[in-house]
Length: 368
Ligand code: NAD
Image (tube, rainbow, N blue to C red; front, side, top):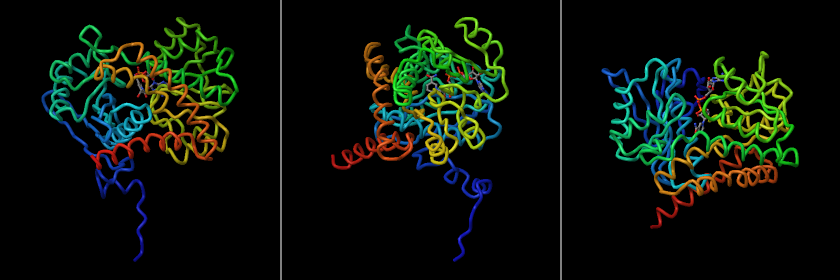
């Protein structure tokens, strides 16, 4: 039999959901539609072996529905590994709402979304992601208990972004220790791409430590504001990847490490908050390794946010949140050393550790 080679472009025509490039044995994918509010959302539940699938909701003006579906698939899978490597009893899920958060988000739309989350009876628990505010989660909380990241005034752990930034800072320090022999970032040049909720907080940590911080964003007003506040340099060039900096911190959207950018990347360390930084985990993880660039896996070092919201479910306080987040430093060093010792990419080493925890629990569950 002649085996037919199917191009990526043709694949989605044959298997619209299970054949998607980002499909990775996801347990459930829920399409939510509400004509009255204009809600179009996709909830991806990747794996619930370790616990309910927890992950934020992203509202984004996707170019098309394929893009939204693939984002939900990729992001929910990332959450499975993030919680597993962090030692949390949570599975991986994520929701995307199709639309512009600035112009299309309304209280009615958020409430309707909350009702869809509620209909899953706790199999998926939501939180905020890009395009969402704590106040949106507070609204969702009025129709379902299956939401985290709510305000402290109503029993939540508050905005997770500062904790995420602290975890990224810890991961960055560990990666610096591995690459430069010291985790002191004073004098190191760091380019932060995306100075939103997490990016700004990271800029603050870096500035306090005495790093030379360069910031980049598509939002000019934010650039001016953050630059003024922390005396950070605004990047005005055409290709930030080719900038000769010590560290590149992707804190905007994913897939910025790809065929086009890797050839130009001058940074010696990559450590940032964005989810799914590698456009292709295997190919681009290997390319970074070949170039001698130390890559701190995104799902490992940006886990501060989930540690923070997990506190709402497990009722632990700020001290434990900080302890767990600080531990990202140790896990990052462990992963980087393991990758070097086994001649595998840092991303693969992190996946292996996370997967081993899921496999062990699956075995336990089968035997019980
Ligand atoms: P945010 O929406 O507050 O900030 C994103 C920023 O990136 C915005 O200022 C936006 O203008 C900017 N941006 C968008 N496209 C850009 C581009 N091409 N170049 C430069 N800047 C660009 O989001 P956030 O909460 O700060 O999250 C940032 C990233 O970290 C996201 O990928 C998110 O999924 C991830 N993350 C966030 C958390 C959290 O706790 N908020 C946790 C884990 C991971």
